[in-house]
Image (cartoon, rainbow, N blue to C red; front, side, top):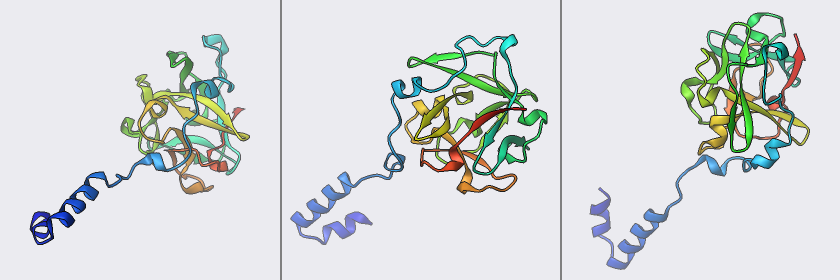
Length: 200
């Protein structure tokens, strides 16, 4: 179809049109949100000791002050819920294994129900669901904290190393209601992406 229309144009106009199509910008997540921090920036944030032992495990709620709710798992999906001491909300940095990548320590986050915080299908697109899944120690199950502008983010190893800007956790749409989904996203500086650890 395009060739038929091009043939009707003068040769110079046709060449210009094809050249414009060849260099037309492609949509990309890179134009959404700020650049990722450097490894040096991430290294300055609070993090558990490089060697986590069974004696050092403390189970805690992962709390979102924007909603006053905590990360819990329902039907595999991670969401924010009224904070309880139920097993799906009691999280710890896992002793199943630490990973040293790009000069940084990353850890699985596991709950008392033996589910690791992960990404649905290992996808890295912004909006990908966070889930509670069997601990298989894939890169999408490794995390660390990162603080910028007074907000503490949960950074994902696979997302941080991936080609898109989706690499930290936030509450979908900034919702504050019970069951609101937690998703992978880029930093936008909103409080729905702010997390803290509280002893359960």
